[in-house]
Length: 213
Ligand code: ATP
Ligand code: MG
Image (cartoon, rainbow, N blue to C red; front, side, top):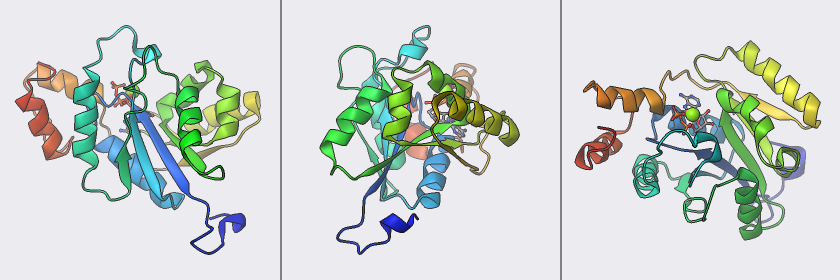
Protein backbone atom coordinates (compact mmCIF):
# COMPACT_ATOMS: atom_id res chain seq x y z
CA UNK A 1 0.00 0.00 0.00
CA UNK A 2 1.24 3.49 -0.77
CA UNK A 3 1.85 5.99 2.07
CA UNK A 4 -0.63 8.41 0.53
CA UNK A 5 -3.35 5.76 0.95
CA UNK A 6 -2.74 5.19 4.65
CA UNK A 7 -5.64 7.17 6.03
CA UNK A 8 -8.73 6.11 7.92
CA UNK A 9 -11.24 3.89 6.17
CA UNK A 10 -13.73 6.75 5.68
CA UNK A 11 -11.34 8.75 3.53
CA UNK A 12 -9.29 5.90 2.09
CA UNK A 13 -9.08 5.90 -1.66
CA UNK A 14 -10.88 3.00 -3.30
CA UNK A 15 -8.79 0.69 -5.42
CA UNK A 16 -10.55 -1.10 -8.22
CA UNK A 17 -9.19 -3.82 -10.44
CA UNK A 18 -10.55 -4.16 -13.95
CA UNK A 19 -10.13 -7.49 -15.67
CA UNK A 20 -11.07 -7.27 -19.33
CA UNK A 21 -11.44 -10.32 -21.51
CA UNK A 22 -13.48 -12.15 -24.08
CA UNK A 23 -14.16 -14.84 -21.47
CA UNK A 24 -15.24 -17.30 -24.15
CA UNK A 25 -15.45 -19.13 -21.78
CA UNK A 26 -14.14 -17.78 -18.46
CA UNK A 27 -11.73 -20.27 -16.78
CA UNK A 28 -9.60 -20.77 -13.66
CA UNK A 29 -6.66 -18.93 -15.26
CA UNK A 30 -8.74 -15.73 -15.24
CA UNK A 31 -9.98 -16.26 -11.69
CA UNK A 32 -6.59 -17.10 -10.18
CA UNK A 33 -5.03 -14.09 -11.93
CA UNK A 34 -7.70 -11.67 -10.68
CA UNK A 35 -7.45 -12.97 -7.12
CA UNK A 36 -3.64 -12.82 -7.08
CA UNK A 37 -3.67 -9.19 -8.25
CA UNK A 38 -6.44 -8.29 -5.81
CA UNK A 39 -4.34 -9.63 -2.96
CA UNK A 40 -1.05 -8.07 -4.14
CA UNK A 41 -2.51 -4.55 -4.51
CA UNK A 42 -5.09 -4.85 -1.72
CA UNK A 43 -7.90 -4.04 -4.14
CA UNK A 44 -11.40 -3.41 -2.82
CA UNK A 45 -13.01 -4.95 -5.85
CA UNK A 46 -12.17 -6.60 -9.15
CA UNK A 47 -14.65 -5.93 -11.91
CA UNK A 48 -14.70 -8.43 -14.76
CA UNK A 49 -15.60 -6.74 -18.03
CA UNK A 50 -16.56 -9.13 -20.83
CA UNK A 51 -15.89 -7.51 -24.20
CA UNK A 52 -18.66 -6.66 -26.60
CA UNK A 53 -17.35 -6.83 -30.14
CA UNK A 54 -13.59 -7.08 -29.59
CA UNK A 55 -11.70 -5.38 -32.48
CA UNK A 56 -8.71 -7.74 -32.21
CA UNK A 57 -10.79 -10.91 -32.55
CA UNK A 58 -12.57 -9.93 -35.77
CA UNK A 59 -11.47 -13.16 -37.48
CA UNK A 60 -13.12 -15.61 -35.09
CA UNK A 61 -16.80 -15.87 -34.25
CA UNK A 62 -17.07 -14.86 -30.62
CA UNK A 63 -19.94 -16.45 -28.65
CA UNK A 64 -23.02 -14.33 -27.97
CA UNK A 65 -22.27 -11.77 -25.23
CA UNK A 66 -25.28 -12.97 -23.24
CA UNK A 67 -23.64 -16.38 -22.69
CA UNK A 68 -20.18 -14.98 -21.96
CA UNK A 69 -21.64 -12.53 -19.44
CA UNK A 70 -23.72 -15.19 -17.65
CA UNK A 71 -20.79 -17.62 -17.46
CA UNK A 72 -18.64 -14.87 -15.94
CA UNK A 73 -21.34 -14.13 -13.36
CA UNK A 74 -21.56 -17.84 -12.46
CA UNK A 75 -17.77 -18.13 -12.17
CA UNK A 76 -17.36 -15.11 -9.90
CA UNK A 77 -20.37 -15.57 -7.63
CA UNK A 78 -18.38 -17.26 -4.84
CA UNK A 79 -15.89 -14.39 -4.46
CA UNK A 80 -17.29 -11.39 -2.53
CA UNK A 81 -14.64 -9.11 -4.09
CA UNK A 82 -15.57 -9.98 -7.69
CA UNK A 83 -18.19 -8.25 -9.82
CA UNK A 84 -19.15 -8.38 -13.49
CA UNK A 85 -19.93 -5.33 -15.58
CA UNK A 86 -22.11 -5.08 -18.71
CA UNK A 87 -20.44 -1.79 -19.67
CA UNK A 88 -18.87 -3.18 -22.86
CA UNK A 89 -21.48 -5.69 -23.93
CA UNK A 90 -24.19 -3.04 -23.82
CA UNK A 91 -22.18 -0.69 -26.04
CA UNK A 92 -22.83 -0.57 -29.78
CA UNK A 93 -20.02 -1.32 -32.23
CA UNK A 94 -16.45 -2.36 -31.47
CA UNK A 95 -15.28 -1.93 -27.89
CA UNK A 96 -12.11 -0.12 -26.90
CA UNK A 97 -10.59 -0.25 -23.42
CA UNK A 98 -10.00 3.51 -23.28
CA UNK A 99 -13.76 4.16 -23.64
CA UNK A 100 -14.50 1.64 -20.89
CA UNK A 101 -11.99 3.17 -18.47
CA UNK A 102 -13.28 6.70 -19.15
CA UNK A 103 -16.89 5.58 -18.61
CA UNK A 104 -15.93 3.66 -15.49
CA UNK A 105 -14.03 6.64 -14.04
CA UNK A 106 -17.08 8.85 -14.55
CA UNK A 107 -19.11 6.54 -12.28
CA UNK A 108 -16.55 6.51 -9.43
CA UNK A 109 -15.26 9.17 -7.01
CA UNK A 110 -12.49 11.10 -8.75
CA UNK A 111 -9.65 9.72 -6.62
CA UNK A 112 -10.52 6.04 -7.21
CA UNK A 113 -7.42 4.16 -8.33
CA UNK A 114 -7.88 1.81 -11.23
CA UNK A 115 -5.68 -1.22 -11.81
CA UNK A 116 -6.11 -2.67 -15.26
CA UNK A 117 -5.21 -6.36 -15.25
CA UNK A 118 -3.88 -8.20 -18.30
CA UNK A 119 -2.09 -11.47 -18.90
CA UNK A 120 1.42 -11.60 -20.34
CA UNK A 121 0.16 -12.10 -23.91
CA UNK A 122 -1.73 -8.81 -23.84
CA UNK A 123 1.27 -6.65 -22.87
CA UNK A 124 2.71 -6.23 -26.36
CA UNK A 125 -0.81 -6.08 -27.79
CA UNK A 126 -1.60 -2.94 -25.78
CA UNK A 127 0.76 -0.98 -28.03
CA UNK A 128 -1.87 -1.40 -30.75
CA UNK A 129 -4.77 -0.30 -28.55
CA UNK A 130 -6.64 2.95 -29.12
CA UNK A 131 -5.10 5.93 -27.22
CA UNK A 132 -2.73 3.67 -25.30
CA UNK A 133 -0.69 6.60 -23.90
CA UNK A 134 -3.78 8.10 -22.28
CA UNK A 135 -4.86 4.68 -21.06
CA UNK A 136 -1.50 4.09 -19.37
CA UNK A 137 -1.77 7.48 -17.68
CA UNK A 138 -5.35 6.88 -16.49
CA UNK A 139 -4.76 3.56 -14.78
CA UNK A 140 -2.11 1.40 -13.20
CA UNK A 141 -1.34 -1.43 -15.57
CA UNK A 142 -0.72 -4.85 -14.07
CA UNK A 143 0.76 -7.61 -16.22
CA UNK A 144 0.32 -11.11 -14.87
CA UNK A 145 2.60 -14.00 -15.74
CA UNK A 146 1.05 -16.67 -17.93
CA UNK A 147 2.41 -20.10 -18.91
CA UNK A 148 4.11 -19.90 -22.29
CA UNK A 149 5.63 -16.50 -21.41
CA UNK A 150 8.82 -16.59 -19.36
CA UNK A 151 8.83 -13.92 -16.61
CA UNK A 152 12.12 -12.64 -18.11
CA UNK A 153 10.42 -12.33 -21.52
CA UNK A 154 7.48 -10.52 -19.90
CA UNK A 155 9.93 -8.19 -18.16
CA UNK A 156 11.54 -7.33 -21.48
CA UNK A 157 8.12 -6.58 -23.01
CA UNK A 158 7.20 -4.40 -20.02
CA UNK A 159 10.47 -2.47 -20.27
CA UNK A 160 9.83 -1.88 -23.97
CA UNK A 161 6.28 -0.57 -23.44
CA UNK A 162 7.48 1.57 -20.52
CA UNK A 163 10.23 3.05 -22.70
CA UNK A 164 7.85 3.85 -25.54
CA UNK A 165 5.22 5.46 -23.28
CA UNK A 166 7.13 6.54 -20.16
CA UNK A 167 4.61 4.87 -17.83
CA UNK A 168 5.07 2.10 -15.28
CA UNK A 169 3.62 -1.38 -15.68
CA UNK A 170 3.55 -3.65 -12.65
CA UNK A 171 4.37 -7.31 -13.03
CA UNK A 172 2.69 -9.88 -10.82
CA UNK A 173 3.62 -13.55 -10.68
CA UNK A 174 0.49 -15.66 -10.41
CA UNK A 175 0.30 -19.43 -9.80
CA UNK A 176 0.79 -20.94 -13.25
CA UNK A 177 -2.40 -22.15 -14.93
CA UNK A 178 -1.78 -23.45 -18.42
CA UNK A 179 -5.41 -22.91 -19.38
CA UNK A 180 -6.81 -20.96 -22.33
CA UNK A 181 -10.33 -20.47 -23.66
CA UNK A 182 -9.09 -21.62 -27.09
CA UNK A 183 -7.99 -24.94 -25.60
CA UNK A 184 -11.32 -25.32 -23.77
CA UNK A 185 -13.29 -24.67 -26.99
CA UNK A 186 -11.12 -27.20 -28.86
CA UNK A 187 -11.57 -29.79 -26.13
CA UNK A 188 -15.35 -29.49 -26.27
CA UNK A 189 -15.33 -29.87 -30.06
CA UNK A 190 -13.20 -32.98 -29.68
CA UNK A 191 -15.40 -34.41 -26.90
CA UNK A 192 -12.60 -34.15 -24.38
CA UNK A 193 -13.14 -33.18 -20.70
CA UNK A 194 -12.97 -29.62 -19.41
CA UNK A 195 -13.48 -30.65 -15.79
CA UNK A 196 -11.24 -28.72 -13.33
CA UNK A 197 -10.38 -26.14 -15.99
CA UNK A 198 -13.54 -24.10 -15.42
CA UNK A 199 -15.85 -23.83 -12.37
CA UNK A 200 -18.46 -26.59 -12.30
CA UNK A 201 -21.28 -24.07 -12.80
CA UNK A 202 -19.65 -22.89 -16.04
CA UNK A 203 -19.17 -26.47 -17.20
CA UNK A 204 -22.87 -27.18 -16.62
CA UNK A 205 -23.88 -23.93 -18.34
CA UNK A 206 -21.82 -24.86 -21.42
CA UNK A 207 -23.39 -28.33 -21.57
CA UNK A 208 -26.93 -27.09 -20.97
CA UNK A 209 -26.65 -24.56 -23.80
CA UNK A 210 -24.68 -26.78 -26.16
CA UNK A 211 -21.91 -24.18 -26.55
CA UNK A 212 -18.71 -24.78 -28.55
CA UNK A 213 -19.95 -27.98 -30.18
P1 ATP B 1 -8.52 -17.06 -25.97
O1 ATP B 1 -7.76 -18.34 -26.06
O2 ATP B 1 -9.88 -17.09 -26.60
O3 ATP B 1 -7.69 -15.86 -26.39
P2 ATP B 1 -7.87 -16.57 -23.19
O4 ATP B 1 -7.74 -17.79 -22.36
O5 ATP B 1 -6.60 -15.91 -23.63
O6 ATP B 1 -8.85 -16.86 -24.41
P3 ATP B 1 -9.07 -14.02 -22.79
O7 ATP B 1 -10.52 -13.80 -22.53
O8 ATP B 1 -8.51 -13.73 -24.12
O9 ATP B 1 -8.76 -15.55 -22.38
O10 ATP B 1 -8.18 -13.31 -21.68
C1 ATP B 1 -8.57 -12.28 -20.84
C2 ATP B 1 -7.36 -11.83 -20.02
O11 ATP B 1 -6.94 -12.87 -19.16
C3 ATP B 1 -6.13 -11.50 -20.92
O12 ATP B 1 -5.46 -10.38 -20.36
C4 ATP B 1 -5.29 -12.76 -20.79
O13 ATP B 1 -3.91 -12.50 -20.98
C5 ATP B 1 -5.57 -13.20 -19.35
N1 ATP B 1 -5.43 -14.65 -19.19
C6 ATP B 1 -6.13 -15.61 -19.82
N2 ATP B 1 -5.77 -16.84 -19.42
C7 ATP B 1 -4.78 -16.66 -18.51
C8 ATP B 1 -3.99 -17.58 -17.73
N3 ATP B 1 -4.13 -18.91 -17.85
N4 ATP B 1 -3.08 -17.04 -16.86
C9 ATP B 1 -2.94 -15.69 -16.77
N5 ATP B 1 -3.65 -14.78 -17.48
C10 ATP B 1 -4.57 -15.26 -18.33
MG1 MG C 1 -6.65 -14.43 -25.18
